[in-house]
Length: 422
Image 1 (cartoon, rainbow, N blue to C red):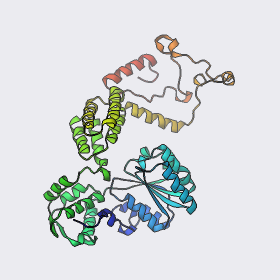
Image 2: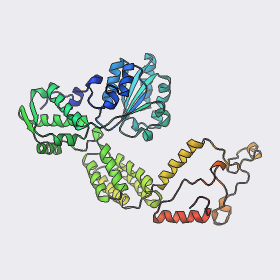
Image 3: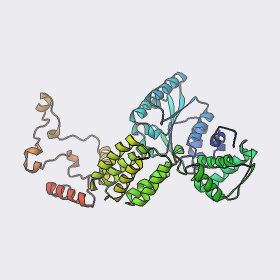
Image 4: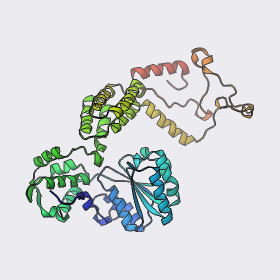
């Protein structure tokens, strides 16, 4: 049993640029982030990459190099009040670095609380995320940050970390640990330095003698007994949730159940799983089967009430239903295309007939004039132009090729004839 209560990953955390293993494209001799750090002119930034590749370490290195006051928050536990307290302290100090781990978990109001201080330079924000910041960070905040993408560690990187751990850590040096085979160690680590260190510690903790020789089979057996390969605390759900969603999207209920089981065995939060199913039901199934959204929403509410172990039954029902359902991303594509068009064309003039006219002046200006109430016409439909003139005939929603959306297409074509090309 190791004596230190400080995790190995923390004991060996690099303090300087030259000590970091990996991320050569950013921190190598000609790396863009290395140049930024050595210049001392640190911009607000988002560090995006899988777990255990150095996001927190890089933030610490930056703080060490520039000798700036450094504050740290976790988006899992911090709220707007915590953000404002840090901003208040930074204001008194003139400036400071604020590192926010898992920034993708901040909601809009929490992210908005950062905007003013980042814009004024009161704080230099360093956010770490395993999720695509384009989707998870507010565009206003994202536009004020540089985004640096980190990569998974290679086998060569993991080999260097292993040698460093066995030769430099004061606790491990008390033992003679030899990995006769390393394939399992590197495979289970999955490019994650934290997982590598956890596995090495696991071996040392389980040993009854000072001399330890480790084979692949021994490590796998030990890992299965003592830790979940799915490491939710280290955010290793990154890969499994991706495989889970892609299996459902690919209409494979069996693979989806396997990855669901991996998450359940790892103790993943039921809210996280159910929330992803709720998003998928609309993004990947949509109008091909509108009931999918209803079931996913019921699942989300139910599992939040009952929790494990019974929640696994509801999750299994929902997963198999969604995976077996016809698929369509037509609604998802439609809103993306519509937003893109809004960005391209700006604030186009709304047709006068569609404008609200709450005052006499507005009515006199023609607001609402000529509007035809659909329910006053046969079939509850009237053929008028609803788009701004510049976008007349522009189609965003193209129903998918499935039974339900083919009916939708048929109905829209009966209404609009050739206007939208249905």
